Amino acid sequence: MAERERDREQHERLFKAASNPLRKKMAEKIGNRGITREELKKELGDVSDFEFKFNLDYLIAEGFVVEKDGKLYLTEDGVDLAYGG
Image (cartoon, rainbow, N blue to C red; front, side):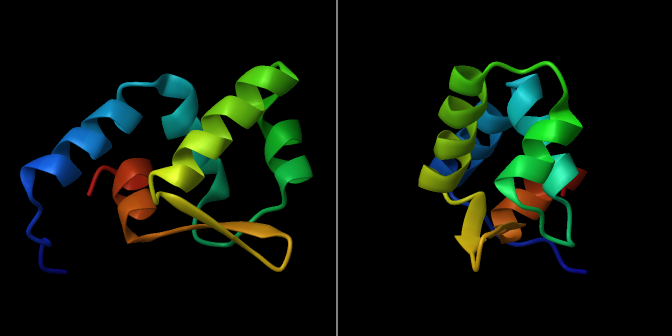
């Protein structure tokens, strides 16, 4: 698969998200299959409700994750975050 061209802003967003271990772990857990918020929270284990919501909201706002029909899915940028693309 050919690597997409990224501008500086995209690189900075990806770096900022990847620098947070919880955000990276969230992206990895969501994976390619999609997952509900409840399933994700359960898979993450001991994460406070505030920390969970804050970081998931960040991933959604920055375009790494989308929510559709009650499930969370990675965007193309989210796949890069999860799998180091």
